[in-house]
Image (cartoon, rainbow, N blue to C red; front, side, top):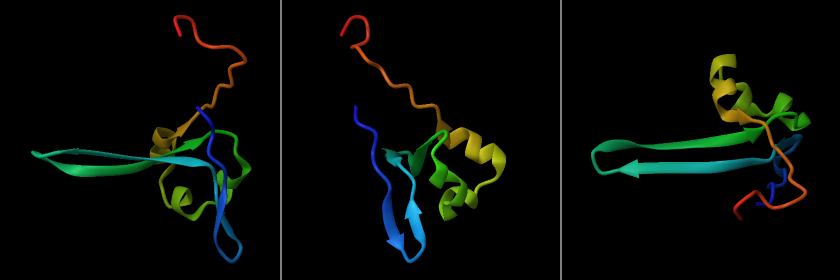
Amino acid sequence: TIMPGAYPVGRGWSRPPHVHFKASHPEYRELATQMYFAGDPLNAVDRILGALTPAEQAQVVVDFIRRTSPAAGS
């Protein structure tokens, strides 16, 4: 997997690396969310991530672990 890059969305604002997820089921409301990577400096100034409470941010920010070799069993 390759970590996505940041991208500009307007004057003075760049989105930090993140991944979009959308889940759906006929009997439930659709869920759309984003996953951010811990430690990225743009997280601190992202308007979307910043609109979340600290508890909500903790649910969508994950540690990114770089591997130098394939996982066992791959």
